[in-house]
Length: 472
Ligand code: SAH
Ligand code: SF4
Ligand code: F3S
Image 1 (cartoon, rainbow, N blue to C red):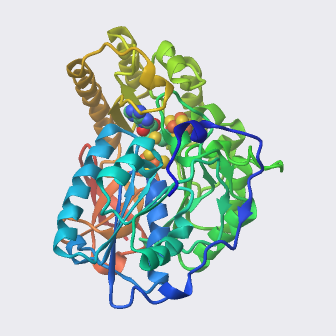
Image 2: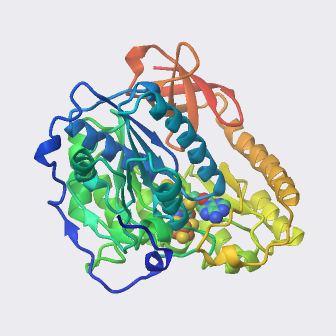
């Protein structure tokens, strides 16, 4: 048993990152354990977790399990968790209750708990003491060892917890079963070294480690050959890509080289404003296959709060960057993340956030109430704003955010846009997909248009989506 340790997780040394290519192995005793059995993976959290779950699914399929959408029908259930806010925790605890009930009726079900919550001391201890029926617990650094843990479970039949609180390495060659045939996630870096004072990610994911350019580029080439039309480059702070490598190669270089491979649509998330360079803006504006959509989290409009958050930019420098991006990248859409109710946020600080939203008129904003994360500096800061007050601020902010989302969407009325139709819409007779600017569109179209970039005329506009019909 190896339990996590937040103090260890915080450490950053100059230990060299290893690129490990041969550590994924399948022990002989479990080669076919999944034959005639089914797996179900439940995923919470960000795109990185979604992509990790694609790895987990592929590993289980290597063991001959087949996928089921029905948790009640599964022989192995994996919960891939997120620790970013308290409500993410609550959802997982609720799900654990449901699975416990299942396990009482079907004793042989194997239960696996992984992801960012597993990296938290209090959670791992809780699983050890109160959830002994959870068979396997591992963290974000050792997904590739799932076959080993299953093999051990078959031999020893007891709970196995192995969570590393380390800076981490880069693992190549872990299989992946992609959810979509048209768009794919591509990790370009792992971890985060920014240590924003409220955020748990640098503790749950380790230090920033960039993948080698050739590994990223080879993956993208293969995706293109396999018929993928869109890729999203993933990292907590993609603009800092390459800074940890001993080569002079940065995010602008990577974007250029990925664009030259010729895949039709390239996206990237998330961009921390701190590392956004002019060179990147130039590359994005120059290549038509780099999509004009940027997620640029501001978090707060108050310089006092930004400093307490350790975001390393000011309201003024953020607005300058925002305007530069708008000016240089034609038709660009920009979205953001905002936290309300950070410790010490006064009504005046909050009004500054509202002012910035009024000035920048975001296409979309994801808004959150500050959530205390154990082990982070912000969790120790004095916080005397009541939850009612915070909820009221969130509602006021959301009202504005919705107003501008709607206003930006209105510009699309009667316009013709390109949509990659990636799936069926919930609306009968419609497909769904996104514009280059990441607007969700429900397209009235038959199946033959699925998985294509189609010209769509926008017929109706809502706050969160557009309706349209094929016009070619
Ligand atoms: N790496 C990204 C953010 C990843 S987390 C970036 O720096 O931009 C996604 C969002 O969750 C953050 O942008 C922030 O708005 C929110 N968030 C993170 N920690 C939080 C906390 N403790 N309480 C509330 N919101 C939080
Ligand atoms: Fe968290 Fe900040 Fe890193 Fe984003 S940049 S993951 S908010 S510490
Ligand atoms: Fe959540 Fe971990 Fe992502 S905390 S947001 S799943 S990096």
